Length: 246
Picture (cartoon, one colour):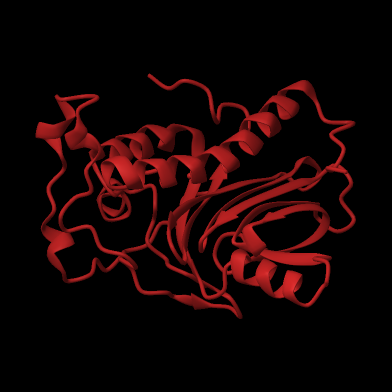
């Protein structure tokens, strides 16, 4: 069974439903737009520190003012020609995850994270509803873990998910839905000792997204798929995240 939501306040329940749906949908969107429109994007105190921008063509990228005036056009969905994977070097190293230190809410950093004009605008607008955004790399995805587990006839009991700035959360797995030999699927769980928590993971072909909600610990994280081996982890404001921003 999926983790129970009993005891959650109404506002938190709404957020849970929104995030659970969002985790699954973000991977579908990435896959479908990749085929049709070159992968459109889809994902506390803000870290205040100087960020050394990489010396590559991205550093000269201008804000997409001209494209903004053609809302809904195919141009907005088309990846920028100078988009680059792994735009920032990792500053913190874990056993499976590596954290960059660029402030993901800074518009200059967002220019390096966004694939195109539409995703840039989404992230800038989303800034109003989040506290932090951080690019994290991973070495082994859940597809590889699921494939190994199925091949060995085993069952997933515990997984690890990244938070911000090197933090890693252990998750007790309560239910799984693994498909295509483990190439894609969903994982449901809870933080150990926190029955009011809820964790959902969706993964496909070395892309993954997840949410961690634990009202008792005041943990509200969402991670969106970015590129294979990359996720964007966000600390969100549960009171307004997901609501229309104008």
